[in-house]
Length: 136
Length: 386
Image: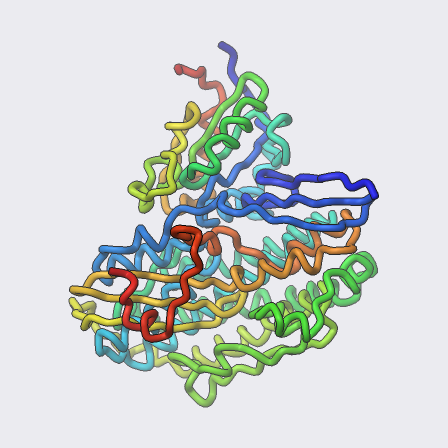
């Protein structure tokens, strides 16, 4: 299995979160944190990306869409689950409309906990994807 | 006439949140727009049921990442009278400071995304840069950048001292000239004016018909602001009276200018409130509170408009929570204002209403396909909840 070594391109999917983690993901691309200088670029379509950031707990309506988007990512692909909801279910663990945390739907490589995590930890999570062979 | 169906979403470059828009187009002209929601529904109301008041407050704040303080203020405005507690003025002033800072950060983010939608990515970055200063102020005042979680029943977690207030005022000093310049760009730039003017028109009549709220209604000439019409907490103090920003054009451009001007109004309120806060005054410690059984409602002005909470309490626990967020009131107007517009203007029109989908996703259960009508008595006594 191959691995991504540098300049990961990033796609992003909000699977039903509260926007908090979405904001912090976008904060990574603002002039203060500016991950573009490391060669990371935000891509609108998953077909152009190496790393998929998923925020929020996945609800039943969204689970099928998330699977579709995951299949569109070209190999080698990595998935980062962001926020307490995406990692474990958080506050909405027992809700009626939930299909599960992200790793119940698609394989996840890196978990970034927090409500919401700071941009520093999100960047750290993405960097940990690099040079890391997938075990699953 | 041949119509083509053009789907947008749930994941799309121009959308930051999952929503599905189905456009029926003839050439590039939109004939009909349909909306399919439910991609961000996670059962906030149901998840809050059964919690004690303090824990429920925590859950309510997680409804939205952009306006979490407004949700907690609406909840507290409902629950504090039921628990028979009156926080001191300093707590009210501190809540006002956080809520108005949140309005600044929300409007700056919105203005940035609006610039991004028409391809002005440099302007987007300028707005985000200024927004970081506001987030710094949040970090200093509450310890969190996004979900502030600084409220508790009857008081706040931190008391603002001289150091915090000085930091806040210094940050406002830093962003004010920059935002003035960015507002000038929003008002005068030829690209922006040609893309925003006369698009997404909402007349005063239509806005009244659809019951629109917030900056969208104010840009159509409706003088309605909960802070002014039904003052709550520190807004009831004479010096902190809000002057709503009203425009009459009713297009996307008017909505941008209303939001830009509201930022300056918020800054004025924060400065005034900071003058009134006594840095040495101590705020009360957190206490265990017991609320009597019953129902109540409260509303506040969130960055996007009126935010309404209805709470029923039984045995000191939440028995029913109902949220009506501003986007729920505004989102219905899309199918009306998208008609006869060009498909290239869809991102501008959709974003000009500043939708917050995650706030809005509610569910209604229709039993036996029969319409149920609740009288105000039933609604208030909570009879149908049993």
